Image (tube, rainbow, N blue to C red):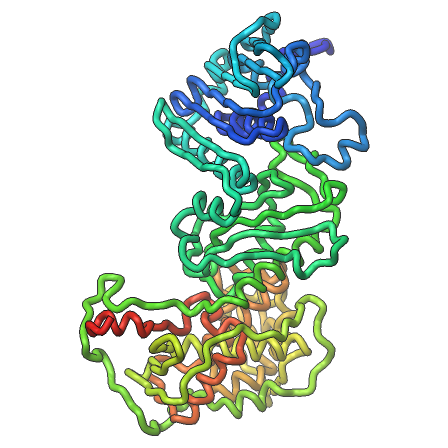
Length: 591
C-alpha cells in the first residue's frame, strides 16, 4: 500500500480515540473549557447516560461569532501561542483538539455569546462536516450540545457501558472537577431529573464534604502545608482527609487535583498511603481530597492525551511535602475511636462477659511485657541513621491515661482519661510499642545479633530459598545471619537478640515473612522494612490470655503518651477504644 496523506477528518477521529473515549471524557473537556472561560455556574444535562445527548451550559465569557469556525478546527486554541506558553500551562485545556475530536464522532452544536454581542451565534459540526456560522438566541456564555456520540463509529459505540454506568462516570468526573473549584456552582441533570446540585461555596471544606460524603462528615482532618513552607516556595498542599477508620479497599475514594486539574498520580497516592501506614489495614486506601498547587514551570502536563497524568520536575520534593503534610494532620488529631454501647448489633448489657477481671498483681506469663528487658535490648550503640528513613521525633498527642486500671479477660486493659473509659487491646498496643522501638533502633543501625554455636538447618521451599537471597541486605540489618543450606533448605547462623529475649522462634518469624503472598524485598524500601518489623513485633508481642503484673500493665499504658501512632497497631487495627462519659450518662439515664 503506498504512503498517502490522511484526511483531516480521519486525523480528528484518530485523535478522538485518545481524547474522547466515553461520555465522561466529553463532559470533562467541555467543563474544563467552561472553567477556562471564567464560568461561575456550569450545568450538565444527559440523556441516555450521555450516549444519546450531552449538553453543557456555562455563564463564561463566550466565543465571538467570527472565532466559532476556529473553535471547532483542529489545533486551534486561545490558551497558548508559543513554546514558552507550553512550558508554563496555567489553564485546563491547551491543545486545541477537543472540540474538533468531539465533532468528528458526533453531532456537535456550539451556541455562544460574548458580553459585547447583541445576540448569540451558532456553529454545527456533524461527524466532521462543519456548517457556516448563523445567528442564534442565547444568553452570555456558551451552550454545547453533543448528540449521537460515536453514531457513525459502531465499533467504538459498542464498547460503551450501560446508561447508568456511563452516567455514573460523568458524575464522578464532575465531582472531581468540583472539588477543586468550590467557587463555581455545578449541576447535573440525568434524563430531566436533577441528580447533583453543588452551589458555589466560600468555604472549600464544605464543598469537599458535600462531594465525598459520609466519610468526611465527622472529625475531618484538614491538611495544610502552607505554614511549613517558605514564602517563595513553588509548592503548596491543602486538603481534607478522613480518619483512618474510613479507609476503603478501592482507591477511587482518594482524589487529587493539580492547579485545579484532576489528576491520577502514583507518587501522590504512595505519599498518602505511607502517611497512613500503620493506621489502616494493608490493601486499603485513605479517603479524602488533596489539592496540590505548584508553579506551572515545575510540572509537565503535556504527557497524556487526556491530561490526567503529569510529570513533576522534582517528584521527590512533591512526594515529601504531601507525605509530611498528611502525616502532620494525622499527628495532630486524637485518633482513638469512640464506641457507643450497643453498636454493631451487640446487645447492651450491664455485665462483663467472657473472662475475669483482676485489679491486683497477676503473675507474669512467659511472654510478659518486661519493658526494662526490651529497652535494654534495643538501646544498643549504633551507627548513623540511614537516609532511606526520615526520623520524626514529635510523638502523636494522646490523652494522658489515668493511673488506675484493671486487666479484664487477660486480654483487655481498662482505664480512663478525661473523655471517658478506655479499653486497650494489650496485644495490639504491645505490638505497636515494639514496632516503633525496633524501627528506631534499625534506623540507627543493625539490630544486635547473637551467633549460634551450631547453625540451625531446616527444610524450605524453592520459593523461600529464592526470596532469602533477594532479602539478604534487609535481613542483615534485622540481625539475621541466614543463608541457603541447599536448594531446599535454609541455615540460620545468627538471630536477633530481641527475638531471643522474647522467646520467639527466629526461623518461624523468618519463614512466615518469606512466605507472604505480597512479599517484595526489592520494592519500596520503607514498606518492605515496615512489613518485616511488623512481623517480628507481632510474633513477639504479648497475646490475649497472657496475664500481666501491675508493673507491666502500667509500663505498657505509659507508652500511649510517647509512642507515635499508639492508637493503631502496625496492621492498622485500633489499639484502644473509648466509651465517652456522655454515652455512659445516656445509657444510665443521667443525660
